[in-house]
Length: 191
Image (cartoon, rainbow, N blue to C red; front, side):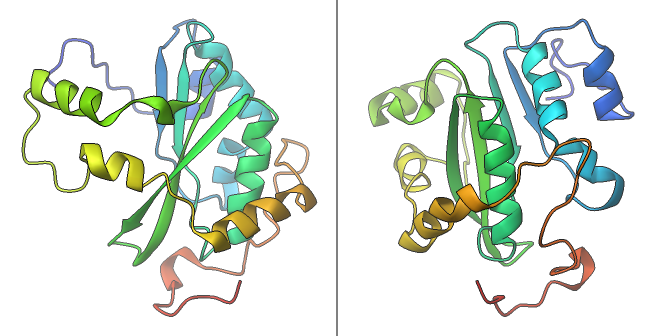
């Protein structure tokens, strides 16, 4: 990917870059650090709005991780609530991340359309056209399987109306301290 002529690697403060850039993008994909300390400012409504402002048009997408609905269900709810204040659609996919030993979520945000509508045949065609090989997780079948929401996650999402959005003036996750990034136990926390 780094050899692709479209790639421009830029190291620095991501928020400062997003807020100052005049560049526009079709897609913004961010894998941020966990929302602790200064990183909480990468999860605010104002920052998500700044990202939306960098999208070329209403067909743009913003993709980011959305915490674990098992380990940090309140942070998961707050991130989704905050994103819903900025983007019309939040489409969540779920994947087991071996490094974290838990189910994780990734959220795809847009204003124009929701993403699950792509059919199996189109996914197969795109993988073949792009000569993508040796995929270990993603296939036309897993694309749709990762979109299935377990009933307990549906319950968590229904509870999201009771959590505050994250804003610059109050960048507080209600479950901060319930989980230490360096100390994640292998057993599940009580939901």
